[in-house]
Length: 393
Image (cartoon, rainbow, N blue to C red; front, side, top):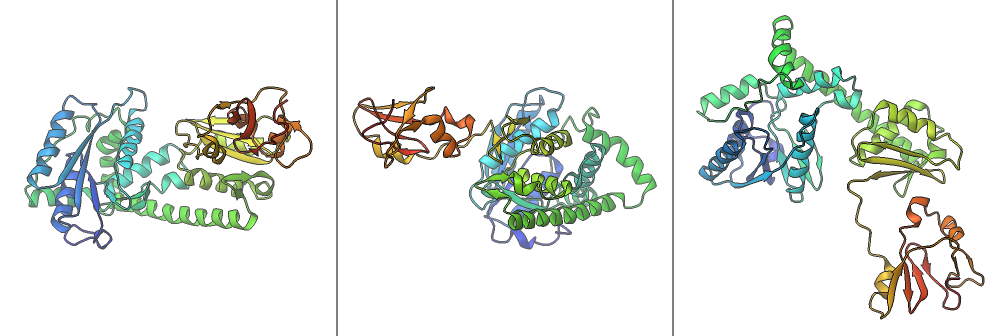
């Protein structure tokens, strides 16, 4: 969308959710959406509880939606006070929004062209690569829904003019002038000075972000080509022996692409460099790298990636499902020195050897459930059924 006078074709027929803060940008977007997509809009307000006026903002948004007959929901989140409160607030806000969307809904945020320019400059000053400099995409998948920024090609001046012409009211965030926040420092002090020396600087910076987004798309395409051609990912695990045949630049590109696809925060260059190093370590070396709440482990020539804060719920074990209604069923876990006999085998083997041959990583072995009936081992999670004659020695 290049102006606010016409409908955005992408939003026609969509179920729209607006992230409504109560500020001028989101109020303008709210008015635009309600005017053009009546009956398909609902609103969510995130109350960060970081300002003494936060409840007033929530009330303003509630009244605005009530007066326009728009379904409204306010979500309370609590942010830990830290040196990176902006980032923590952003992550908590998006996590809350994502969890409150239904399948195929489109979440619309009021980010505009000036916001895009600020984002690129922030990423530039942090030394970010192509992914960071691509800044905010206009459209992306967002859990089971989509995140869309209709105003991304609209300048702040157009938004202010729209608000004035429609006699809109909004609330002012008291933190907007606090230059201790880096984005506010750019907005209040740096960018106004740059505008005096560089004509159309906001449009030009936004255009650069679009160029970086195109380059990022090509890098993603290359990663997908490499992954398919060299069979780099099997069962969601990266195959080290295949990956290390590529150049270091393409290896890093594949790793970044894979980490992004998993929805993880991107590690620093230092962590990525360490990861490149450990891939060539001895095969029996214990490898564990950590960043944020994420981990990478290596086993049997494969890299395993984990989100330690959001470990997925285990799928129902078929052996437990088969045995759960039998009386005297016990669930135990392995002990050192155990020997077992798999169903259909003539001889017993050490449980350790069975787990190794089944390619069960060491960090998972002690978590596997063993199912006993009347004291006799009947089956083991991820391994299979055991012999009825010799089960546990």
